[in-house]
Length: 286
Image (cartoon, rainbow, N blue to C red; front, side, top):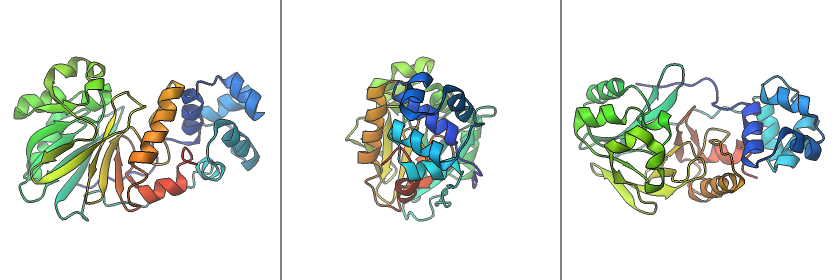
Protein backbone atom coordinates (compact mmCIF):
# COMPACT_ATOMS: atom_id res chain seq x y z
CA UNK A 1 0.00 0.00 0.00
CA UNK A 2 1.55 3.25 -1.16
CA UNK A 3 0.95 6.62 0.49
CA UNK A 4 1.33 9.78 -1.56
CA UNK A 5 1.35 13.24 -0.01
CA UNK A 6 0.82 16.35 -2.14
CA UNK A 7 1.61 19.00 0.48
CA UNK A 8 3.96 19.53 3.40
CA UNK A 9 2.83 19.35 7.01
CA UNK A 10 4.07 22.91 7.66
CA UNK A 11 3.71 25.99 5.49
CA UNK A 12 5.72 29.21 5.74
CA UNK A 13 3.44 30.61 8.44
CA UNK A 14 3.79 27.44 10.52
CA UNK A 15 7.57 27.62 10.33
CA UNK A 16 7.63 31.24 11.51
CA UNK A 17 5.18 30.46 14.31
CA UNK A 18 7.22 27.49 15.50
CA UNK A 19 10.47 29.46 15.43
CA UNK A 20 8.88 32.37 17.30
CA UNK A 21 7.16 30.28 19.96
CA UNK A 22 10.16 28.00 20.39
CA UNK A 23 12.31 31.04 21.13
CA UNK A 24 9.63 32.36 23.53
CA UNK A 25 9.12 35.54 21.51
CA UNK A 26 5.88 37.47 21.51
CA UNK A 27 4.64 38.97 18.27
CA UNK A 28 5.57 42.38 19.64
CA UNK A 29 9.10 41.26 20.46
CA UNK A 30 9.56 39.79 16.98
CA UNK A 31 8.20 42.98 15.45
CA UNK A 32 10.80 44.99 17.37
CA UNK A 33 13.73 42.87 16.22
CA UNK A 34 12.58 42.26 12.62
CA UNK A 35 11.00 45.60 11.74
CA UNK A 36 7.91 43.74 10.50
CA UNK A 37 4.79 45.09 12.22
CA UNK A 38 2.60 42.95 14.45
CA UNK A 39 -0.41 42.92 12.12
CA UNK A 40 1.75 41.69 9.27
CA UNK A 41 3.22 38.97 11.48
CA UNK A 42 -0.27 37.88 12.51
CA UNK A 43 -1.28 37.68 8.86
CA UNK A 44 1.80 35.63 7.94
CA UNK A 45 1.17 33.12 10.70
CA UNK A 46 -2.44 32.89 9.44
CA UNK A 47 -1.10 32.13 5.91
CA UNK A 48 -2.32 35.49 4.61
CA UNK A 49 0.72 37.76 4.90
CA UNK A 50 3.41 38.90 2.47
CA UNK A 51 6.18 36.57 1.35
CA UNK A 52 8.43 39.04 -0.48
CA UNK A 53 12.16 38.52 -0.14
CA UNK A 54 12.81 41.62 1.98
CA UNK A 55 10.22 40.62 4.59
CA UNK A 56 11.46 37.03 4.65
CA UNK A 57 15.09 38.16 4.95
CA UNK A 58 14.25 40.34 7.95
CA UNK A 59 12.37 37.55 9.67
CA UNK A 60 15.08 34.99 8.98
CA UNK A 61 17.66 37.27 10.57
CA UNK A 62 15.50 37.97 13.61
CA UNK A 63 14.71 34.28 14.15
CA UNK A 64 18.16 32.87 13.25
CA UNK A 65 16.67 30.87 10.37
CA UNK A 66 18.50 30.24 7.11
CA UNK A 67 17.38 33.11 4.83
CA UNK A 68 17.63 31.37 1.46
CA UNK A 69 15.91 28.23 2.70
CA UNK A 70 13.20 30.37 4.30
CA UNK A 71 12.64 32.18 1.00
CA UNK A 72 12.12 28.82 -0.69
CA UNK A 73 9.56 27.97 2.00
CA UNK A 74 7.80 31.31 1.52
CA UNK A 75 7.44 30.54 -2.19
CA UNK A 76 6.26 26.99 -1.44
CA UNK A 77 9.22 25.95 -3.54
CA UNK A 78 10.14 22.75 -1.72
CA UNK A 79 8.54 19.34 -1.74
CA UNK A 80 10.74 16.29 -1.17
CA UNK A 81 11.43 14.09 -4.13
CA UNK A 82 9.52 10.93 -3.31
CA UNK A 83 11.80 8.68 -1.28
CA UNK A 84 11.30 4.95 -1.15
CA UNK A 85 8.08 5.07 0.87
CA UNK A 86 7.72 1.31 0.92
CA UNK A 87 11.35 0.54 1.78
CA UNK A 88 12.27 -1.01 -1.58
CA UNK A 89 15.95 -0.20 -1.17
CA UNK A 90 16.40 -2.30 1.95
CA UNK A 91 17.28 -5.96 1.60
CA UNK A 92 16.16 -6.70 5.14
CA UNK A 93 13.41 -4.22 6.01
CA UNK A 94 10.01 -3.53 4.50
CA UNK A 95 8.30 -0.29 5.52
CA UNK A 96 4.58 0.44 5.36
CA UNK A 97 3.59 4.05 5.99
CA UNK A 98 0.05 4.28 7.41
CA UNK A 99 -1.75 7.62 7.38
CA UNK A 100 -3.97 7.33 10.44
CA UNK A 101 -6.86 9.40 11.73
CA UNK A 102 -9.65 11.34 10.04
CA UNK A 103 -9.91 15.02 11.00
CA UNK A 104 -6.40 14.93 12.43
CA UNK A 105 -3.91 12.80 10.54
CA UNK A 106 -0.57 11.34 11.47
CA UNK A 107 1.85 8.71 10.20
CA UNK A 108 2.19 5.35 11.86
CA UNK A 109 4.42 2.66 10.42
CA UNK A 110 4.90 -1.06 10.10
CA UNK A 111 8.59 -2.01 10.07
CA UNK A 112 8.67 -5.59 8.80
CA UNK A 113 11.61 -7.98 8.76
CA UNK A 114 11.52 -9.36 5.24
CA UNK A 115 12.80 -12.84 6.10
CA UNK A 116 10.84 -13.58 9.29
CA UNK A 117 7.79 -11.36 8.51
CA UNK A 118 7.87 -10.16 12.12
CA UNK A 119 6.76 -6.53 12.42
CA UNK A 120 7.10 -3.59 14.76
CA UNK A 121 4.27 -1.07 14.89
CA UNK A 122 5.77 2.39 15.22
CA UNK A 123 3.55 5.17 16.60
CA UNK A 124 0.04 3.65 16.41
CA UNK A 125 -1.75 6.96 16.77
CA UNK A 126 -5.24 5.91 15.72
CA UNK A 127 -7.21 3.11 14.02
CA UNK A 128 -5.90 -0.05 15.63
CA UNK A 129 -8.13 -2.26 13.48
CA UNK A 130 -6.76 -0.72 10.30
CA UNK A 131 -3.17 -1.27 11.45
CA UNK A 132 -3.96 -4.90 12.21
CA UNK A 133 -5.63 -5.29 8.81
CA UNK A 134 -2.61 -3.91 6.95
CA UNK A 135 -0.30 -6.22 8.89
CA UNK A 136 -2.47 -9.23 8.01
CA UNK A 137 -2.55 -8.24 4.34
CA UNK A 138 1.25 -7.98 4.40
CA UNK A 139 1.49 -11.47 5.94
CA UNK A 140 3.28 -9.87 8.90
CA UNK A 141 3.11 -10.85 12.56
CA UNK A 142 3.19 -7.89 14.94
CA UNK A 143 5.68 -8.70 17.70
CA UNK A 144 6.37 -5.29 19.26
CA UNK A 145 5.23 -1.66 19.43
CA UNK A 146 7.66 1.28 19.57
CA UNK A 147 6.67 4.84 20.42
CA UNK A 148 8.84 7.78 19.37
CA UNK A 149 7.14 9.99 21.96
CA UNK A 150 4.12 10.13 24.22
CA UNK A 151 1.73 12.58 22.58
CA UNK A 152 -1.88 11.44 22.28
CA UNK A 153 -1.87 11.34 18.49
CA UNK A 154 0.99 8.83 18.52
CA UNK A 155 -0.24 6.46 21.24
CA UNK A 156 -4.04 6.38 21.10
CA UNK A 157 -4.23 2.98 19.38
CA UNK A 158 -1.66 1.28 21.64
CA UNK A 159 -4.33 -0.34 23.80
CA UNK A 160 -6.07 -1.86 20.79
CA UNK A 161 -2.86 -3.24 19.30
CA UNK A 162 -1.69 -4.69 22.62
CA UNK A 163 -5.10 -6.23 23.32
CA UNK A 164 -5.27 -7.87 19.88
CA UNK A 165 -1.70 -9.19 19.78
CA UNK A 166 -0.50 -9.59 23.38
CA UNK A 167 2.77 -7.84 22.55
CA UNK A 168 4.51 -5.23 24.69
CA UNK A 169 4.87 -1.56 23.78
CA UNK A 170 7.97 0.50 24.53
CA UNK A 171 8.60 4.22 25.07
CA UNK A 172 11.35 6.29 26.65
CA UNK A 173 11.07 6.60 30.42
CA UNK A 174 10.82 10.39 30.22
CA UNK A 175 7.63 10.20 28.11
CA UNK A 176 5.69 7.59 30.07
CA UNK A 177 3.62 10.12 32.01
CA UNK A 178 2.94 12.10 28.84
CA UNK A 179 1.29 9.00 27.33
CA UNK A 180 -1.59 9.33 29.80
CA UNK A 181 -4.05 6.44 29.85
CA UNK A 182 -2.00 4.58 27.23
CA UNK A 183 0.86 4.26 29.73
CA UNK A 184 -0.84 1.30 31.41
CA UNK A 185 -0.34 -0.64 28.15
CA UNK A 186 3.35 0.28 27.77
CA UNK A 187 5.59 -2.18 29.59
CA UNK A 188 9.02 -1.59 28.07
CA UNK A 189 11.44 1.35 27.85
CA UNK A 190 13.40 2.63 24.89
CA UNK A 191 16.91 3.54 26.03
CA UNK A 192 18.80 6.17 24.05
CA UNK A 193 22.07 4.69 22.87
CA UNK A 194 20.63 1.18 22.95
CA UNK A 195 19.12 -1.07 20.30
CA UNK A 196 15.76 -2.68 19.64
CA UNK A 197 15.06 -5.57 17.28
CA UNK A 198 12.25 -7.00 15.23
CA UNK A 199 12.98 -10.31 13.57
CA UNK A 200 16.53 -10.06 12.28
CA UNK A 201 16.45 -6.27 12.02
CA UNK A 202 18.19 -4.04 14.60
CA UNK A 203 17.51 -0.36 15.17
CA UNK A 204 19.59 2.16 17.10
CA UNK A 205 17.62 4.30 19.55
CA UNK A 206 18.67 7.93 19.18
CA UNK A 207 17.66 10.69 21.60
CA UNK A 208 15.94 13.48 19.63
CA UNK A 209 14.08 15.23 22.42
CA UNK A 210 12.75 18.77 22.41
CA UNK A 211 9.27 18.34 20.99
CA UNK A 212 8.90 16.13 24.05
CA UNK A 213 11.47 15.54 26.76
CA UNK A 214 11.93 11.87 25.93
CA UNK A 215 11.50 11.90 22.17
CA UNK A 216 13.55 9.30 20.31
CA UNK A 217 14.22 8.26 16.74
CA UNK A 218 14.81 4.72 15.49
CA UNK A 219 17.69 4.35 13.02
CA UNK A 220 18.06 1.37 10.70
CA UNK A 221 21.49 0.65 9.18
CA UNK A 222 20.11 0.12 5.68
CA UNK A 223 19.28 3.77 5.25
CA UNK A 224 16.13 4.89 7.04
CA UNK A 225 15.07 6.48 10.31
CA UNK A 226 11.70 6.81 12.02
CA UNK A 227 11.85 10.27 13.54
CA UNK A 228 8.41 10.94 15.03
CA UNK A 229 7.86 14.68 15.45
CA UNK A 230 11.54 15.55 15.86
CA UNK A 231 11.61 16.56 12.19
CA UNK A 232 9.12 17.18 9.39
CA UNK A 233 9.94 17.73 5.75
CA UNK A 234 11.18 21.33 5.75
CA UNK A 235 10.29 21.91 9.39
CA UNK A 236 10.28 20.62 12.98
CA UNK A 237 7.78 19.51 15.57
CA UNK A 238 6.82 22.45 17.77
CA UNK A 239 8.26 23.52 21.12
CA UNK A 240 7.30 26.22 23.62
CA UNK A 241 10.47 26.82 25.59
CA UNK A 242 13.84 28.04 24.37
CA UNK A 243 15.90 25.20 25.92
CA UNK A 244 13.62 22.63 24.25
CA UNK A 245 13.86 24.45 20.91
CA UNK A 246 17.64 24.70 21.00
CA UNK A 247 17.94 21.12 22.23
CA UNK A 248 15.74 19.76 19.46
CA UNK A 249 17.68 21.52 16.72
CA UNK A 250 20.98 20.29 18.20
CA UNK A 251 19.71 16.71 18.62
CA UNK A 252 18.30 16.51 15.09
CA UNK A 253 21.45 18.00 13.60
CA UNK A 254 23.69 15.65 15.53
CA UNK A 255 21.63 12.46 15.43
CA UNK A 256 19.74 12.64 12.13
CA UNK A 257 21.20 15.15 9.69
CA UNK A 258 24.66 13.66 10.17
CA UNK A 259 23.43 10.42 8.58
CA UNK A 260 24.22 9.69 4.90
CA UNK A 261 22.37 12.01 2.55
CA UNK A 262 20.30 9.24 0.97
CA UNK A 263 18.85 8.19 4.35
CA UNK A 264 15.05 8.25 4.26
CA UNK A 265 13.48 10.08 7.20
CA UNK A 266 9.99 8.90 8.14
CA UNK A 267 8.25 11.63 10.17
CA UNK A 268 5.15 11.60 12.33
CA UNK A 269 3.28 13.94 9.98
CA UNK A 270 3.55 14.76 6.29
CA UNK A 271 5.66 13.22 3.56
CA UNK A 272 8.86 11.26 4.01
CA UNK A 273 12.04 13.11 3.15
CA UNK A 274 15.78 12.50 3.08
CA UNK A 275 18.78 13.86 4.94
CA UNK A 276 20.07 15.50 1.75
CA UNK A 277 16.73 17.25 1.12
CA UNK A 278 16.60 18.59 4.67
CA UNK A 279 20.15 19.90 4.57
CA UNK A 280 19.25 21.78 1.40
CA UNK A 281 15.81 23.05 2.35
CA UNK A 282 15.07 23.03 6.10
CA UNK A 283 15.42 26.64 7.34
CA UNK A 284 15.91 25.61 10.99
CA UNK A 285 19.39 24.35 10.07
CA UNK A 286 21.79 27.09 9.11
